[in-house]
Every structure is written in structure tokens, then in C-alpha cells.
Length: 381
Image 1 (cartoon, helix red, strand yellow):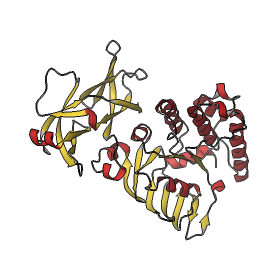
Image 2 (image 1 turned 90 degrees about the horizontal axis):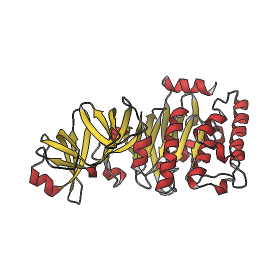
Image 3 (image 1 turned 135 degrees about the horizontal axis):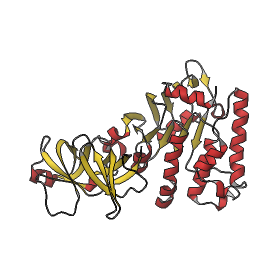
Image 4 (image 1 turned 180 degrees about the vertical axis):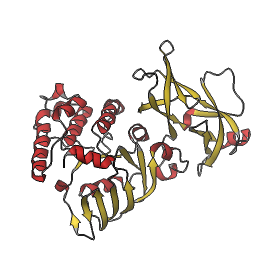
């Protein structure tokens, strides 16, 4: 079966079954999920929640004591059927924090190693290699560095080469184990657009482990939240991020929501783009790479939202939207309260003090005005 045929099977409903129990010295991972085998699924949770153990079990580096791991008709582990395929027999591409490139080879030779190995494997299996080497090189802008030794590359450049090498194995699924954790903010900003592009261009289902919610918000279509070795939440990223009970499970993070809106207009003089959220207009910093009519994914952090019981005047904040409080949840052991506010179609979260909630008489059902101080552009659709 060709790679394109396998992609079509996944689009037609081929399932990714994860039913497993992994027992380590002082930790047990146990889950039973059917994942959507397309797009990017983020695996999120506190340190020690089982994220990396899950990826290692899928890849074959940890053997579960029971369960089944299968992508459609490819069964990689089945305890009852006594099936356990070793890592080299699984059509999986895994990218680690440590890029694990061959330091004595240049970029071209590192890529050639993966390309030749995949061609040998697919020939033995009677398959075809349909991910084009030149297309991968172009997608990751590697042309100008093919002759360079990998030790001379920056961390971001090395990660792009490692990602290219992983793609050239033509995997049926990508496992990304915090691939950006070792990079500074500048290098992360450099490689994130590449990750976003290749996961959609090559249509390879991806499990992406990250402790950084900004990365998750930008890349992930869905989230699976782990806590103490078990799945606590699984669903669309935007829906999970709106859950006010996510923080106690995932740890303290920059709480907020994802919203999608259509570009209405650009104002190059003021460097602003106006986005329509089903009737609510939101001004964001100029999105130069977008066109009128494009759909943008935006992230609004709870700390960048304030609430007022009357429409304010004389403010520098440009985004003032009417809404209604639907939930208020107090953060245990603190004077903070998370508010969830319904706009016309979207939800917004606001982080407030308990004192402000009591002084303003805020409660579910109360009409308020939402003041959005800042919005970040997480990507387009």
C-alpha cells in the first residue's frame, strides 16, 4: 500500500487505538482511548504525569503489561494476541529534545541515511516511498546548509535537520517529545512556523508532548491532558483551554482561550488588523501575512482581560466587548478567581481578584463588559 493510500484510509476513518498499561518502578501509566488519527494532538500535563512514557510505549521502547496499540490494521502491540513489534518494525517517526544527529556527517549525509534506510524498509514491505526528499528540504529551508557539518549549526537549525530526517523515514505517525524544550525563545520562534507547516503539508498524524501552552495553542488541533498516569481530559484544543478546572491538573500556566475569527480589514497606518468574532470586532497587531477573509487563530490570556459592570469611557484599551459571566471558580489557597464570559459566540476567560469579584457583585448571569488588553496571533487556518 502506498503512503498516499494510507493517508486516505486515515481520512476515511482509520482509528488510532491506545489501550495500555505500563508499569515502571514507581509509576503506572494506564489509558484506554481512541484518538483521531489526523492533525496534531498535544499531550499535556505536569512533569511526571506520563507524557514521555506514553510516547515511548507507542514507539516500542517500553512494553506494556497489557492492552493494544494499533493504527488501523497496523497492530504494534496486542497482549492477548502475543504481538509486540520492536521499534524498527513500527512505521513511527520520533523526534526527541536531543536531536541525535550524526556529528561526523554533514546535513546532506544525515538526510541521506534516513532516506536510504526508508527505501530499504519500504522495498522489503512492498510499499512505496511517497514523501519526496526535495519537498522536505524545501519545506524546512535546508538547501543552503546541505554541505555544512551539523556541529556548526544553531540549535534551531539542528532541530530542523532532525525533523527533516524524521520525515524522510515516511512515518505513519510522528511522535514529538518536547522538541523545543532545549531552545531559547528566539530559536523557538524560528522553528515553530516550520513545525506548523510540515505537520499540515505532509498530513502525518502527530502526538506532540509539550509543557508550553503557547506551543500547544499554536500547533495542536486536540489536547490530551494526563495526570498521574491517567487521561483527565481529551478534546478539541479550544474547548480544553476554556475549562476552568484545567489548571489544578496541568499545573499553573498562562490561562486563556483560543478563538478563531475572520479578517475584516487592515490599517497599515495604525498597524492594526480587525478580526470578526461572529459579530464582535477585535483589534489585534497588524497581521501582515493575512488577507481579508482569512481565518486567524487567536489566543487571549486571562491576565490580559478585565471586566467592567458599565461601559467604560476614556480608556486606552480599544477592545471592549459585551458579554455575560457563565462561571466563576476560585483558585484554591489564593485570592484569585477565574471568570468565564460568554460573548456572542466565543468564550473569554478573565483572571480577577476575589476582592474585585465581591466589590463588583460579579456572579454567573451578570452582564459585563470585557476589556481585552492584548491578543496574540497563534496561526492561520
